[in-house]
Image 1 (cartoon, rainbow, N blue to C red):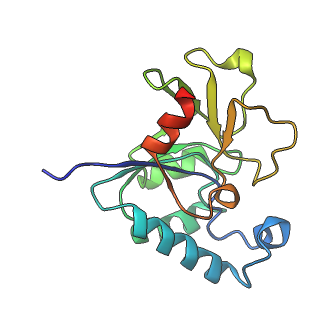
Image 2: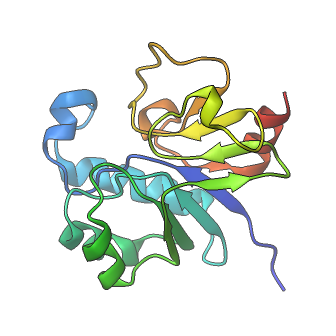
Length: 166
């Protein structure tokens, strides 16, 4: 049996035209942005792997259904503020959909929006997205997984676990 790696990424915003103006000026089009994210994703994530996507997967469910078959691995979605939960659940493209996920053994909670310290029940670190690389107001226990902060490339579980233990 092949080993299964676990990865994290957030805020891919597939199909979202305005995201380029907002915070991704290096891309000339949504097509170019999607091509880079898909290529980076698949260069790291293998078909047997698991990805925790920390929200804002796509602009519309149609975009999610269009892009999902192009991505390696099983995906568990931690919903973001742009994710249409009923529509995405009905589409059946994610292994699981949740509001957050606690990783008790490693000491961190994964969410879309950054959490306050007093909201962290198990552990003292918060892995999140939502801020698109704008770390203003965040603290040392936060780690942004928005694609802008991680070079548009998924981050391996071991890297996150090491950070969470530091």
